[in-house]
Image (cartoon, rainbow, N blue to C red):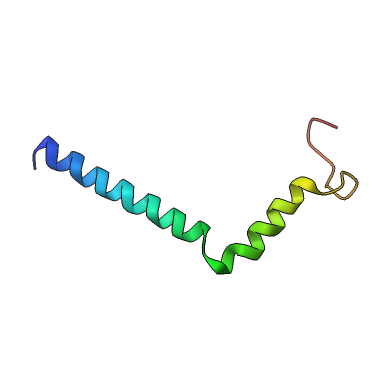
Length: 55
């Protein structure tokens, strides 16, 4: 296997991983989970858990 074949293989694998992540992110069964996580950003500070170094 020469260097160009290895580069091609890495490119194809990278593309497949990217497409897999996009499909996973836009899958319907993840919608509710992602909406809940997105709502955490806008949640009231009193409802957010306390802790960490920035109290």
